[in-house]
Structures are given as structure tokens and as C-alpha cells.
Image (cartoon, rainbow, N blue to C red; front, side, top):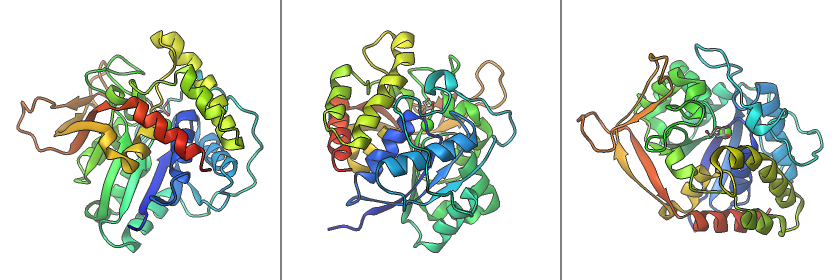
Length: 314
Ligand code: BDR
Ligand code: CA
């Protein structure tokens, strides 16, 4: 059997980030989580670092190493999303405060050291929040770029527009300058935009299947999803909210669930109206170099079956 794929999860939990972490930790045969790096985004950094550890402990994995990263975007004020995720970022279940500690090493240094110390082409970056830590790592050690196997991100939107402004998706909007650096880095990128994530909806029947697993992490996840979806149900008028971040991990486990194409993607950083927009050359009209595989279609039921199966393994 093939060695599990080595991944670093860069994240700002967030209930949907928590689902992504659980999906990864429930898949040890395929994925080796070298570390979790935190970034400010959905909530401030101290909370995302706390939440990452809460999730690891819920999964019975206090051994997972959590590294704290950037407190704010490269050049801009931090924008947070408590209106979606609640005050703690992980509202929903009652959870214990984590006992495990964050590592002493800064997340950016951990990312650099890990990529340089592993064989080139073996470490995959999974980004579930603003791209600040990755951009800082690229600025500090540009030689990491050609050594990264792949960067799979939740971010952006094109046909679907934005979710924090009409043009911009939240993760890119929080730190568009970082996103610009990452998209120009030459790292092979796979992008899970809103075009995909708005199709994986937490229907009640799906949440109930997760709750019915009955384990502590699964019940906590069902409670998180119930909290998380209330905002989106109102916003989109659907029977469930989009479950963005676990699409990144699902792609590593079952890439055939997704369909997309290689494109050029540029990030808008100047216009006040459209800052944070991912300008995707889907129809290949510019001749600009491809720098990302942009996903557009998903087998949503296949995705939820996978998530439920792996949560049951925790
Ligand atoms: C993204 O923004 C965050 O609120 C979610 O965790 C997800 O990563 C969706 O736009
Ligand atoms: Ca996130």
C-alpha cells in the first residue's frame, strides 16, 4: 500500500475548518498530518489556535502538532466572521478548553522547515483560510516553492461570485496581497471555489446521519453544523449551508468527486469595488499562463458519504 500523503493543514477554525480537520484525522491510511498551522481569519488568532486544539482533542489526537501563525494580513486590517461562526468561531457544542499546548515554533518557520527537510515534491499544503502564512513563508524562503507537491485551497469564486462582497470570497478577501503572492509562486494550485462549495449543502438528513454515528466527535460535528448553517439557511434560503473547507481534504482522498480545468487566476488587489476577486480565465481568452486547477463540479452526495464514513472512524 502507498505511503500516506504528507500534508500541512493551514486553517482558521471555523466549524467547516473543523470538519476538514476531522476528515483528515479520520483518514490516517491516506493522509499523514505533519502539523496544523493557524492563521487569523474567521476569528482572531488566539481563538483559531484554541479551536484547532479543541478539534484535535475532540478527535482523541492531542499528539497532533499545532503551530500558531500570522495574527493579521500582510498589509491590511483583519476582518473576521463572528456573524457566521459565532463568538468563539466554533459555536455549537459545549467543549472543554484544550489541554494540549501550541508548539513554540512559529507556523511560518514550521512550514519552511518541513518543506525543506522532506524530499522535494512530497509535502502538500492544504489551506482553509487566508493565505498569509504561506505568503510569509514564500517571502522568507522562496526556495520552498518548487519543492511543494501541491497546494489545495478553499478560496475564491467565479461563476458564483463572492460571499463577503459581491465579488470576493472571504479567505481571499481577508488577505488578497497574500493570495497574489501565492498565485504567482509557481506552486501547483488546486482551487476549491464557492462554485463547488455552494453545492455541498448540510441538509438536515445529512447532519442527522453524522449525529447518528453517536461518537463524541461526530455528535460535536453535528452540533457545529447546526449552528453554522443557521446563517446560511437565512442567507441562501436553502435547507442547509455550504460546507466549504472539507472539500480540500476530500479532493486529496477522492479527486474523482470533483471536475475542473487548468486556468490562469489573477487576484484583484487595487479596486475598492472588487478587491479580493479571483479573476479566473475559464474560457482561456487571455493566453496568460495556467497557474491553478479551478474546480467547478462536485458529486455532493459522494462527498457527504465520504465525510460521514471517515467521521465514523474517529
Ligand atoms: C471560507 O471562509 C470561512 O468563513 C470558511 O471557514 C471558509 O474557509 C468560505 O468563504
Ligand atoms: Ca476556513
